[in-house]
Image: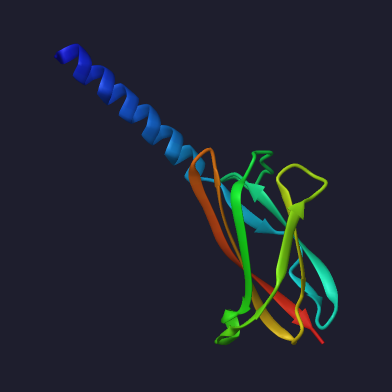
Length: 125
């Protein structure tokens, strides 16, 4: 019984350590300001806690783009996500049709751990 409990505890610690390591991942915005009312690519990168690029596979990646930072979450725009050219880079293709601040909300997982962020991009007139 003691042996089984120790093994279960060791497994729980290993899973917790793995989940903790993954929670250090986040998204970094590579484009802070882009033109409004024109199709554009917004580049973001998956980074570790020290800000270095991480080339991990992100699964179930979803994106939403809205004007929440300016109090208008109902103003949304379609967005398409694709892989970028550098490690951990993701490209969000969209058209920010109005000047102002837009939230690029990314949600996905890396090795089962959630990686989410709400990044603010300014659309310039």
